[in-house]
Image (cartoon, rainbow, N blue to C red):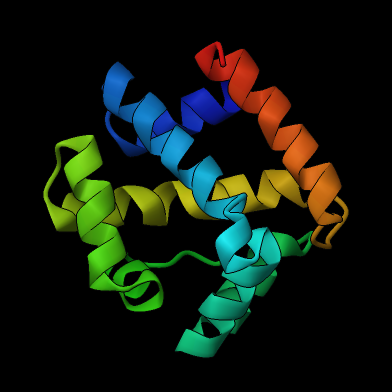
Length: 135
């Protein structure tokens, strides 16, 4: 579990509370049943022209980077604004944080190169959140 905390720390410059909040928000994003979870997130990114990037995160090869602007394009400025407000950051900083962390989180959640069954993903994320955040 330290690996994901380290990823969040490197993205946010080691700000403990913000890094945990960002990681928790990313985990909620990939496990949001209303938007289809990780599969729905991948579909949204593909529809917004980022299919190659998200496919690289899911696949077993090198992760293709994305910019904060691309994250904003894919998720929408309203969602980025909401995330920024929760983190106490500006929208661009929040988007850049997501751009730095989301590819690695998706990569770690798809070690076999495919999106896991939603139930298995939900169980894994619930366990991960419990260990990271004491929930």
